[in-house]
Image 1 (cartoon, rainbow, N blue to C red):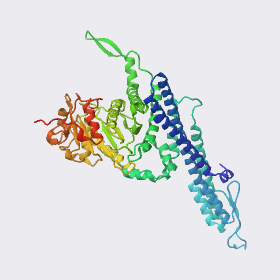
Image 2 (image 1 turned 90 degrees about the horizontal axis):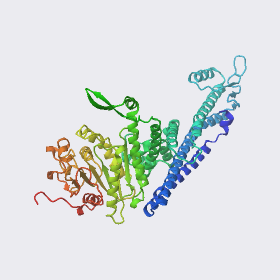
Image 3 (image 1 turned 60 degrees about the horizontal axis):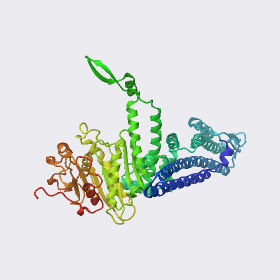
Length: 593
């Protein structure tokens, strides 16, 4: 970049262009929400038949197209803002140098050098020290040598000229570096010239996001940073104090960070996490597509000691050793993501409200937090903690449980709103025998659970605190007990189902109002009595024991997994508690009655 270009540069114009792209991103977001949560939802709820199904499918694709536009325009806006920020910094140095040169009667030449006039005291020869021309130096050693030479010159204008020339050279260098860095980044932010939104497009968006985030680190570092080790309340205050421009930059450049910050508004977390969700899904699908399919013949028979034995083929073992673990992990993660997408697409079915993705991570076993309805505005919110073997790949069943609670609870309120949340925000034990007996899964996950519950409280809109219920199943009850044992969490009710023990010995230790701890144990559920020896409180007491002091709720299901079966007394009783009508829930008869 030359001096004339930098002189004419107006960084504010790039910031104005960024405003335009952010405006387009916002319009695309609004269009997506209207299509997915109003138009498509109404069609699912009111129209049936092949034509309606086809129309909803097309609308779904249109909504995803708008989401892609939202993501890309958001990135472009942030990239332009970051470019403007860096060019503005260079331009300020350049303008300062020009102003200093004018004030000292120095001449700035077209090539960036600076000419200074004669000046200073006359020498022994009776002459005033001569003037001259200096060029700017940007290297540390070179600049130091140049300044030293200027200091030795009896002409005081020499040092002033060298300082101006150095500042001009630094400004030109920084402007050129910014231009070289951002030009390819901005050129990359374009879609394929077709009308089909593919996994490759989202994978490319993932790459674009990473590139913009890395290039824009200097700009992002200049913004107010999230509280270091801050809690949900501090996170909420930080977010409220950001400008709209700053909020947009954080969402587009650090979606994963914003999506995981408890205390931020649910729509913000949902927007950020859906960016992560779609880009991760595209990237993982592309990676899966690149892995060769497993050999068609997995098994063969050999003779071992005169007896036939079934073993894996050599070809299959070679494939498995090279690709098997990653192949299985990708398939399982994508299965879980499809379950989440199915819930997005179900909005409006039987009146089901908009879904909010409040947490998402596809790595290892995965994490996902999904709400039916907005917990920020709901009068009644239920947060469900699943148990052993829960992971992203198998999240569909846990999502459906909270859909069932929402449907039933929503039918028991009059003019009030309900939100139900599936909270898979911890590393659940992978195996009943090998992992579930250990307590570290519960204690490791307890802080994240408490932060999430505090976050619901911090992100609430309006003056009403709302009514909050925690529902926990199996090992999830152990985590909830560990959370209460090791700190405070915001909840008005706690419902345990199939609990193997909650580490504490009494309902009074559960950190909720007295009389608001509820327990369900179905006939044929063996987990409570088996688990008490590892997770029970003093004397191996568990919530099913009378001495624990929980309200023992009537349960008409059987086994360990049907507490949320539709049209059951078990589900109805949970729903009544969730909407603050626990006094209408049916309790089990006392043992001596």
